[in-house]
Image 1 (cartoon, rainbow, N blue to C red):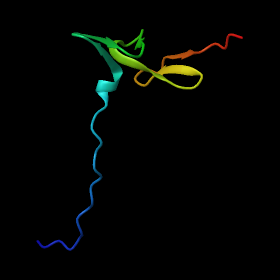
Image 2 (tube, rainbow, N blue to C red; image 1 turned 60 degrees about the vertical axis):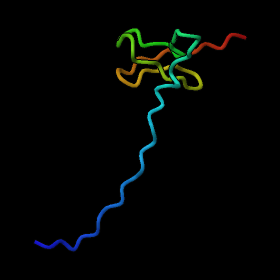
Image 3 (tube, rainbow, N blue to C red; image 1 turned 90 degrees about the horizontal axis):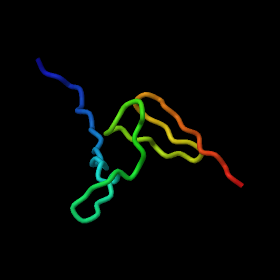
Length: 67
């Protein structure tokens, strides 16, 4: 069967940025962000303007403004 549909153009994917989540000091790597207390190690909290939230379970910690 002959198809006359044009091929779809695929979007180019950007490479993973997991390397930004860790800081390397010599031979030791430490996590740059806090980890989620519900999900455990390997799941980081995203930093927003006034809060930190987990993308997996939705756990949220609001930042306090100390004046």
